Length: 323
Image 1 (cartoon, rainbow, N blue to C red):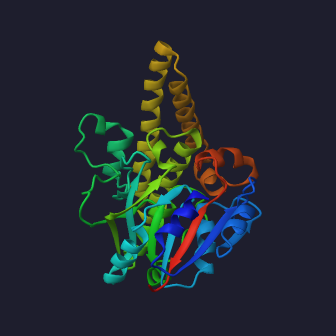
Image 2 (image 1 turned 90 degrees about the vertical axis):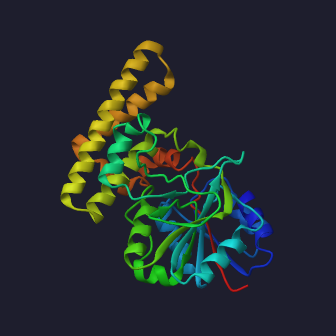
């Protein structure tokens, strides 16, 4: 409810059509939303259909020229929506506009990214960034003052031009969680639109603080999303190289974790060891991509909820009409 309250405050000068997609939540939040925000359209799913499919429902139910996709675990600052709307409306070449994501204490979260090419994957999976911070990684350390064009932005807050969606398509419904915004941005950029990160707008993203402390399912789903992206959009050689790097990275992390566990018996390292061994097992059996596509099914429901922060709610879709 905090998210909707913050939208109320931030949208004083805008005419909004707000759509909430409830992914089979069991805490009564859908009913509470209807009671507290009667002007909000609530679409209640009977099962957790995943991030991409839920947002597609919101996109298809909306009518405006610009669509704002906003996670439910966010808080919007008073001028954010107006600033984003003005920026994307002024520049006809922007297909997707992202903003600065922050933790509650104001510290930044990764907000804009580069494509996970083989060199970038090598830096991250082989832990080379620990030897040299200047090596390219997925997350871009951007300026806090000026807008920059990037390859893709985090899906917690995306303002999208409907014309770009009509050319590039909506979210891939086969991706349940992780990698869907990368895939969407790639297709929209290939269709001729620009992906822009503008730090002049910002939101608090409550669920993003665990970026460097991934749970079991989060790690598995991210690696599956990475491989799926390479298989779909890059060459066979690129996919094979990335698959090999994921394997070597998992082995490397398992060795490190095993040494630390032996010395300290810390629960964190035991969980990391279990995660990487499970990743290797899924890679060996070929079940990793299947897990990525069916993570929301009943058999994986408990794991998939953990990966999405324990919440059944996909997020809030707000569509900005003319001021």
